[in-house]
Length: 301
Ligand SMILES: Nc1nc2c(ncn2[C@@H]2O[C@H](COP(=O)(O)OP(=O)(O)OP(=O)(O)O)[C@@H](O)[C@H]2O)c(=O)[nH]1
Ligand SMILES: [Mg+2]
Image (cartoon, rainbow, N blue to C red; front, side):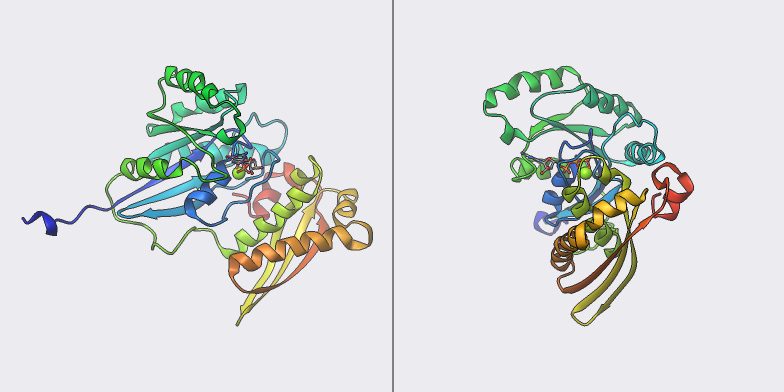
């Protein structure tokens, strides 16, 4: 056969992004896909659900799965569920990206590395946040230490925030996924609904505006979502565990809730590419973080 008519086989595979909380997994997924799909914040345990982001590069389609940070779940059902979800993807993927921070391995990273025994897939170690290292020569001993663990087929320094090192990563991923037909059309970026992304955007604004503890006691449910012409009319409820938490979110004269709603609306308008009317309610659902059945009812799988 004439080599110019030979078709190159397509490739497609699942790629899990795992790591301890706050190392930059969701930032990485967003940068790779080129759209903000997964919420991020400087607080640990921001991501609660596995989220698929589709990256199509030439013949290769990579189905990236962002996961909640793996940690030692203490008392709450929601934390156990998050860690269960994160480690559950390991057995089904073709490639694992294990993310750590450039400042060095921690005991929590080692907890994540121990989970690699659940997977047969090749694993790349991404050293993220290299922008935070004033002295780049400090990377060398870390790379040596990681190589000595004998569990990574590539070790790649990156800065997910600025997209540095990601072209090389894309090339390596595109070669690593197996031959097979693409499972998503190239313009579909996630398998999650718009409702889901909208509820997450509201939760992100809450995470960013509130103290360290309260965000972990909050969840958001979109009650109605109607899109007509160039306007989306959205109603959502913010659930908390106690009246005192409700008062904090609403703020004096409703000011805090108003500004959270404004921030969320601007991001939702960008995401949906239309005008948005967003109405938010705050309700108390006692103990929702520690009841498997309530979690399920609130959309946690
Ligand atoms: N300086 C710097 N900050 C980064 C980089 N990547 C991510 N961050 C920041 O690190 C924080 C955590 O990022 P996320 O993407 O939410 O981290 P995550 O691993 O998804 O966290 P969880 O969902 O809680 O497990 C955010 O404040 C990001 O802006 C980077 O390359 N450099
Ligand atoms: Mg995350």
